[in-house]
Length: 417
Ligand SMILES: [Zn+2]
Image 1 (tube, rainbow, N blue to C red):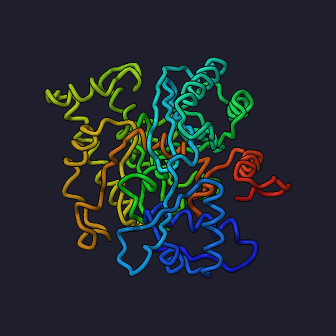
Image 2 (image 1 turned 60 degrees about the vertical axis):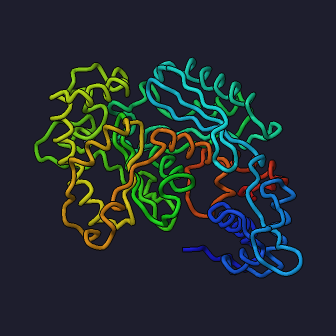
Image 3 (image 1 turned 180 degrees about the vertical axis):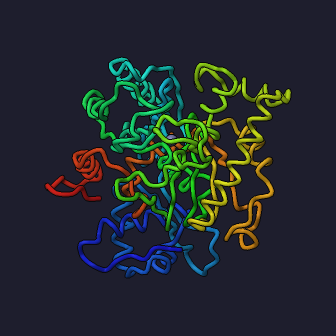
C-alpha cells in the first residue's frame, strides 16, 4: 500500500516524509511517478523534491533507462552522503554500534564489552564508540544523531528492569540525557524489538511488507507488531511483549512473577540455563553453533522443546494478528534459529495456513543482531524517512535539533522537517 499525501497546509512535513519514503522504498523515481504514487499535485511534489535536494537528502540525475523521445526524465534517489547516524544496541554485557548512512549501508561497526551496572563506564564506552565511529563518517561530519536500542519494556512497573535482560541499577534512562550532553548529538531510544522491526522494514526481509510480526530472539524474547508500516504501541508503548505470555500452565517460574512464560523456554537465557552456563553472555555464538553441529544431546533436546513452544507461538500470533509474515531476528545465532524453526514444522493450522505461501509464513532475518543496530541508527533520520513508524522519542528537544539540521529554525512546539 502506498500512503497518500495530504493537501492541508499543516501537512507539509508529513508530505515530505511521504515523498522521501516512496523514494527510499522504490529507488530512483521520476517526479511524474512520485506524483502518481503519493497523490499530491505536481507543483507540491516539485517543491518538495527541490527542498529535499537543497537539504541534500536526495539527488537527481537523468534516468537513461526510461525510453522517451528527447531528454530522459530526471530521477530522484536518496543521497548516500545525505548524512550518517549512529546506532547502538545495548545488552547487559555488550554494546554494539555502527555508523550507518542514509541508505542503510554500514560504514563502520564496533563492539565493546560493558557492564551496564556501572553506568559511568557504560556512558564512557558509548561516548568512545560515538567518537570512533564519527571519525569514519564520509558525509562531511553531518550526523543526524544517535539511536539506542535496548531491551524493554520501559515504564512497566511490574516488568521493567527484571530478568536476564535487566539493566541492573537503572532506575530510569537519564544516562541517555548524559550521552546527549557529552556528545552534543540528539539521542533517541527504542525497545530493541521495535528497532529490529524498523531495521527489517527499511532494509531487511520485511522491506516489501506492510504488516508483519517481528520476533526478537536474543538473550530474552521480545516482539513488535507492524501494522501498515507502523509499530503498534499499545496503551503504554509496550505492546506485544511476547516473551511474557504464559504458555505452560504451572511452568517454570519467571522473573516477572508469573509461571511458564514463553521466554523461559525460547531465549538464549533459557538455553544457557539448560546448559548450566552462568548466563547467556557466557555462551558465545561460536560455542552454540559448535554444540549444534556435533548434535549435543542437551542442545538438541532443548531445541526440540523450544520448537514446540515456537510452533504454538506462531499459531497464537497468526490467529491473533493475521500478519503477512513473522520475521525472526535478534542476537540468537542463525543456525540455531534455523534448527528450531525446522523442528517447529509443520506449523499448526491457523488463519494463515493455506492462504500464505508456507515458506513465507516465517522469515528469518538476514542481519540478525544488526537489524536492531540498523533500526536504532535510523531512529534519528526516520522522522524524515517514513511518516508512520512511530518511534519513542526521548524528548522533544532532540526533535527540535533535528529540525535545525534540516534548515528550519526551531520555533517552539513540535519539531518540523
Ligand atoms: Zn514472565
